[in-house]
Image (cartoon, rainbow, N blue to C red; front, side, top):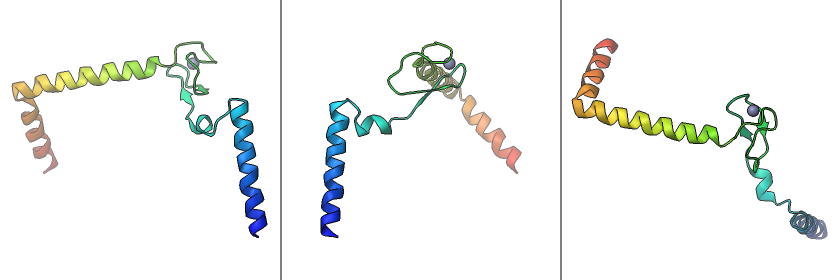
Length: 96
Ligand SMILES: [Zn+2]
């Protein structure tokens, strides 16, 4: 049994060495595929353009960040005007 464990570990080490040799690291395998925001095609990590429609894959993330910022800015504006409190109160009344 001990021998088997040793061989098993040894094989893993060899596999790791081979992977490193060819630039295939375990870390890369664990990376998630990037989903295209235009056609929803799955693209392998590291790609900057969609293999299906050719659009830029990082655009989705940038757009989401931009939208998030806009929403937060609007919320801050509404909060300043006291509208958020009003909305919250209306929501509570509806729940009753
Ligand atoms: Zn696409």
